[in-house]
Image 1 (cartoon, one colour):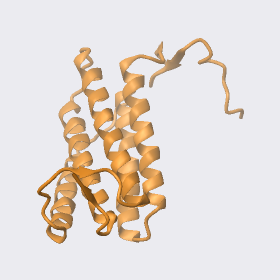
Image 2 (cartoon, helix red, strand yellow; image 1 turned 90 degrees about the vertical axis):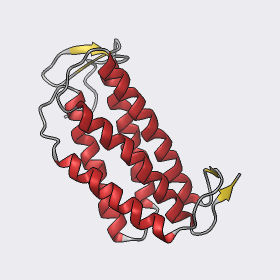
Image 3 (cartoon, helix red, strand yellow; image 1 turned 45 degrees about the vertical axis):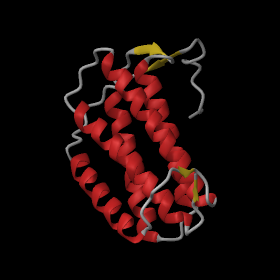
Image 4 (tube, helix red, strand yellow; image 1 turned 30 degrees about the vertical axis):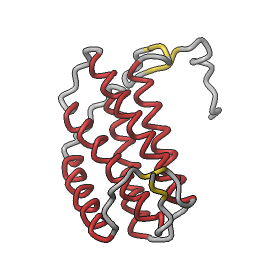
Length: 173
């Protein structure tokens, strides 16, 4: 099977179920940004040595694919994402207890791994904004609150992962 189909050559693509929409449709913008988030997270994962962190983050990548499928019109049960939000909060709390308290703003960077987490966090925030824009256009989705809570907490987790993996090389303003 060829990777190219030529069906998108005129700026259209398909949602779940076959509905054709513009590639600039808010659903496609939201899914595209989440795809970018997943890819950036993959680079961050590739920089890690800790197997536990890797598996946790790969699970997040899988969650993001389920969110994209839902935004594209697929019917997925996303209630497990609420458990993930709790897991994110627990991980944030564990990391925060081991790090010095922040008293000033933190510049993204420190080292390569930390920088990837900072970039991924920024993409996560953009994905959240794109999803909000998609939902504001009147698209009804009973899992809207779950998706938004998941993305919001994910960016918090990614910030803490950046701090954790900066290994004392954080740059404060």
